Image 1 (cartoon, rainbow, N blue to C red):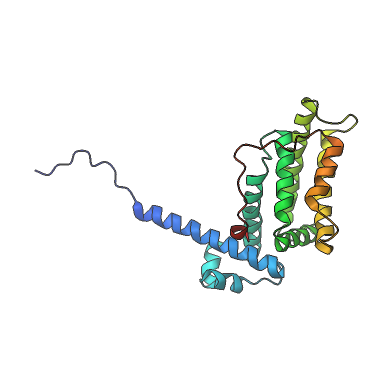
Image 2 (cartoon, rainbow, N blue to C red):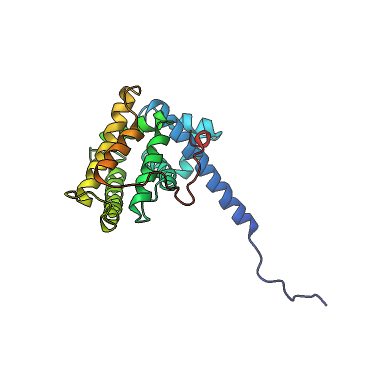
Length: 225
């Protein structure tokens, strides 16, 4: 008599394996696209070159991303995932947020191609028909809202200087970071993005820069390049 006890449902290992393979392939495409767009710009970067770097056909790439615009937005989201690992934007802890932004500025100095891509795209995307327009609108709202919350947290803790408001601090800080990136790209010998950012924050808030935030990830430069 066949024992049918304790067999339970069958595990669809093939489906899980295929899902993992698809996820790895998408990540490989995003990494390659970030490299290509950073090296030659979005408009010059071709889907064919990206596909070649991954070792697939252009049709295979389009299976994962239906067009170049969709790929660009996915690349930008992919890049933001790394930034969120360094900057606890949603934590509400203003001091930890400021320290994270300094870490991000330091890291950005190691990836000039990515910084240039961001600066170029953010300017081009002011046109409503640009494929990254919606992305940048959402990104600025998200970033501004969370940084404002961080400054509000500093105000609640008595760490924000008199006469400044969380909203205006958030707007000015984002403008400073974006402007520093442009100046740095034009002449890296005269601008230290992290130092200038830290000096500005010191002018509006009292931050202990020596405190080590919990679970701060190490930056893997080779991986992110």
